[in-house]
Structure formats: C-alpha cells, structure tokens
Length: 394
Image (cartoon, rainbow, N blue to C red; front, side, top):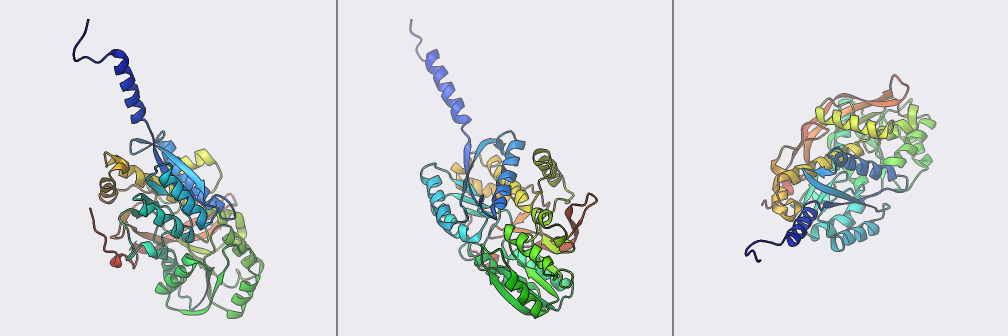
C-alpha cells in the first residue's frame, strides 16, 4: 500500500537526525593569542576568561553553541598571519579574537578583515585601526591603546609631579603610549627611552633614571618584562625615592603578586579592577575563584570574559549569527552590553567609551599584594582618532 504525500519513517528519521546535528553544530571562534614565552600568561588569561563565559553558559554564547579554537602565535607576527589564513581558508572561521600585542595584530588582523570576517579585540587596539583605517568588521572590547598612557598621564598630572621619566618597549604600542602620556601630562619630560621586547636586564635604564632625577617614572613594560623591571627598580633603591605611575599593562594582579614588596605604593590606572561593585563583575570574580582558586584575576582575563559577553550579545540579537555580518554588526552596536566594568558603550569607531580609575598597590590583610581602587581619573573617555573614522554604517 502506498501513502502518497507521506515521508517514509526511515527517511524522516534520517532528516530529523541531520537537522538536529546541524542545529547543534557549534560556531567556531578563532582565538590567536600569545601563550608561550615571558608574556604567555597574558594570552592564557584572555583565553581562560573567554572560555569561562562559555562554561558558565554550558557551552553557549547568546543561546547558541560555540567552540573556541585557540592557537599560540608565539609573539611572532608571521605565525599569527599563517594561523589567520588557516582558520579562514581551511576551517571557515568568521569570528576572531585574542591577539595580545600590536605588532602581531598588524600581521593577523588585516588578513581577517580582508577575509570578510569579524575581529573583536580583547586587548591591543592600535591607532592604525581607530582612525582613517577603521573597519566595520573591527570591534574593540578592551580600549584604544592610547587610553592607557592618557590615563596614566592624567593621574601624574593630578598628583602635581613636575618632572617625569618615560620608558617603554621599542614597538608600535610602546611609541604610542609615550605620545599618549604626554597628551595629558603637562610637566617636564627629563628622559625618554625605549627597551627591547625580550629585554630582561634594565641596569642601563636604572642608571639613566637615577641621573635624570625625575619626580616620577612612567613605565610601560608588559607581562614578564614588567615583573623584571619592577624588581630591578626596587633593587636599585629607586622605588623609595622616585614614585612610579603606570597603566594596567605594567602592573596587573599577576605582576603585583610576583613582585611583592617591589610594587607597594605604585600607582596604576585601569578601566577595571577585581573590587568593582557591579553584578557582572561579582559573578565573574566568583566564577574565576571557583575554577582557578588563588590564581590572580588579571584585567586580561576580565577582557577575555567581556569579549565573550560581547559575542553573546551579537549572537543573541542576530538570528543568523555571523552568517549575516550586517545583522551581527548591528546587534553589537545597538544592544545593551553587559561588562565587568559596568558602564560601556562604543564610540563612532567601534572602540570603547568608558571610565578610568586610579589604583594603588598595597598589602592585603593576608599579606598578599592587592590593587585597591582609589578614585576616578577619566570619565566617558574615548579616543582622539574616532573623529577621523568615516565608516559607512549598515
């Protein structure tokens, strides 16, 4: 007997099985980040913060299953470019994040944008992509890099230091942070020097600082470089005589724990701290401590977490996810974005407009180093490049 118009049970079962498998296929998110070398913990924290948000939502972001595909760039631009090409062309990935350093971003991000994919920066955000070369597929959930130096300059200015010595690594972000500091600091610059990205001995720089006799030192040395610099600064006897004002890349919670007494009294600016009193941050801090125990909660981890929350907003409010890039972009720009920082919005160039705070390194009741939030330094702070961005909106 034939039943015209009815689908045989075996065929129906096969179709349903295929539909379920298709519906549950996770969206792959490419994370290109630095996991090895002295700066390896930076990428590890971004990765783990992002994955923590996925785990909290049982494998979903924005109600859609996702899979984080992570590869180590080794802080080598060439590696990052090759990884980006492979993820785009062989794995079909259309959504990326994770790059830590500006020189690596310059190699990988253009490949991603040229491949008509979305990049969401969870850390570095050079002026190159903030002004005339802004791109509708490029979003930043962390900061525009200059904001770090600007906030430190504003803090040094507010503390009435008259003479400053500046030191940073010799690469794009290092050079930009010098300019940014001087945008808000109006005192005399009595010294300015650049160091190597793999440098661990700063004896020559300590001698230069001593000879210049500044009122304050502004130092940008990220990750393991910052640990080495701060220890040597104390060992050279400079910390007791010349205070330091830094931004978060130079003194995060991991660096503070590593250097101990060498960080006491150092003043740092940041857009986030683990003592921020808002529901999203409390949930993040509690989840991190539950999973990682006493491992320090750095702003890199917080930025990775926020990047994941941003992806979730996009996926929740665009039915086709990244298959419809225009809808995904619109969702990111028009939806309310939950972050560990509290108040957050995008500027015209899709970079954050947010508050910056002054923190002080001190010993907690348990004898461990903590960063304590003291006061607000900048309110609703964006960047100077947004006015140059003439991006056509969808």
